[in-house]
Structure formats: structure tokens, C-alpha cells
Image (tube, rainbow, N blue to C red; front, side, top):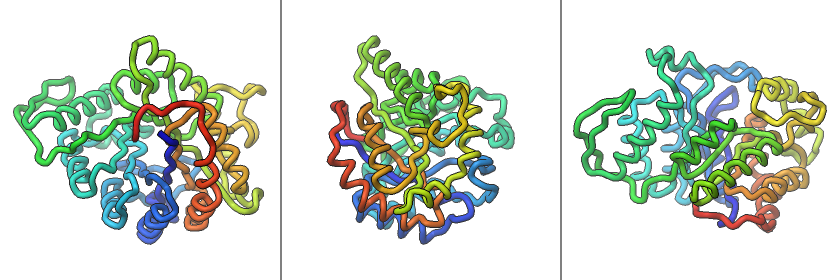
Amino acid sequence: MATEYGLLLPHFGEHTSVEKIVEGSKTAERLGFDSVFVRDHLLFHPHGMEGTDSTFIDPFVVLSAVGAVTTRLKLGTGSLIPHRHPLLLALMINSLQYMFGNRLVLSFGLGNFQHEFDALGIGEWKRDELVEEQVAILRKSWANEHFTHEGQHYHFGEVGFKPRPAPPPKIWYAGGTPASVRRALAYCEGWLPGRITLSTYRKRVAKLRSEAEAQSKPRILEGCIPITSINADREKALAKVNIPGLLESAEKQKFWVKPPSGSFSKAEDLEGSLMFGDPDDVVGEVGKYLEVGIDLIVFDLRFAFDEWEQGIELLGRKVLPRVRELQAPQVRVASL
């Protein structure tokens, strides 16, 4: 299977717009992108590096709008946070699959913002347990016409859904920590960290593959969502990115591999978590992931959403054709 390429949609922040989401998705499909992705929040407080505008459009509403105007583009979550009741979540996922066909790429993560769970009265619940239990309930709902559940957080008698997705969507685990690798291998079909440095990604993938082999499991799907800024002028691309904010965020990542200097102090230290420059630069950065062997790259253009259309065009016309010609050394295990 060839590596697939997606885009994070502009459904958050000051440059959110219906036109960017809908027309941009149609353009992405026309230019050969494989997927579009959304973030998930209940009460959105932007990360400091991405400004202060709290505009946020519900991910399921966004994916429904995109699904209605496209036919091939996969609809991805990067990632779903476990603040919904799993039966509501099952209904929403099943409905998306029914309306738009077998196009869902589902990833789940713990979430970064405690205040969202506190607001719902579940702030004391362990989120890692929530994710695993929700995934188990989803799979029950997909495999059985009727089912019950007695778990640590959710309890209900006989329920059922119709229609049920066939085939059921694959599930990815989101996160870049060693624990995320263990969870992905334990009960998911893929591992999808967000932005992650290349050196850290290499370390995680080596662990993921060695553990799969040790447990006699097949290799699971692997991906990443790097911050991306592309422009015909390399310096203009770099100028769009909040480098100090990214470096500050990187310093807080206690499980990332440190650069040789011991701290994140310059743009080059963000290799892998940030792709910037002209098309040649971005092709080179993608090539580094292809050398490792990767199934999915989702370009996160959040720092250049004001030039969203230009970014899509440059990536679609000047990057995708070239990176698709590059041969990754790994044999892919399955389609997304």
C-alpha cells in the first residue's frame, strides 16, 4: 500500500470559514489528496502557539459537510476525545458511514484540556480507561445486532444500532508517548501521533514494530500530523510559523528525544514535527518519513490558514506527484 496524504481542515481559529472547509475539500479531492482531518473539542481553548481565537466548529458537522460535497476523500478524526457517551458516538459514526460510505479514518486520544472533562462532571475519570472502554463499546456495536455492556464507566442493558458499518472502521490511537504506542498495539489498528520530531518518531516506530513482532502481531498502520507551512519563497513560509511557540511546546514534551544540544532552541530542532519551505523543501521532509516507512501523513497548515487555498495548490501540484514517486522501503500492511 502506498503512503496516503491528508490535510487538517480549517475548522478552528480566526481563519475558520465555511468556504475554506467546503471548497478546500473539493479542491483537495480534485488534486489527489486522500483524506481530510478534523480536531475534536467540547470547549476549545487554543494552544498558546496558535493564537487566542476560540472559534471551533464541531468535527462531525464539518465531516458531514465535506462528505456531502466529495465522493472519494476519506474523512478522518485526529483525534476524537472521550467526552461523548459511547452510544451517542456509535450513532454518529454509524450515521457518517451510512451517509458517505466506507470513508472513515478514526483516531482516538486522551485530550489535552482537563477543563472539558471537569465541565462534564467526569474530571476524575481516567481518560486512558475511557478511550479503551469506548473503543470496546464501539466494536460491540459494530459486531452485534444487540449487545449489553458492564464496564468500569458505562453500564447499560440490551441495545442495538441499525445500520451498522460494514466493514467496521479501523481505529488508530493518537499520541506520541511510549504509552500511546503500547495502547495502539494493544487494541488499535494504527498509531497516529500529531506533530512529533523525526528522531522521536523513529524511536517510537522501532518500539512499535519490535513489540508487534515479539507478540506475534502484524505491523499496525503508522502516521503523523506535522505542522506544515509551504510557500514558493522559503523565508515567507518560515515567517508564517510561530517558531518560539513551537519550541516552547517542544520543551514541555518530556517523552520527546532531545536534540544534540539538549534543548529545543532553533527551527532545525523541530525536524519532523515541522515541515516548512518551498515545495522542494517539503518533498525532502516527507522523504525522511518515507525512509522510515509510513502509511499516512496529514499536513497541518494551521499557521497558514489565511493562505489555505495557496497551500493546498502548492502541496497538491508541486509536492504530491513527486512524493508519490518516492519508494518507501516498507511493505504496507493494509489500506487505511
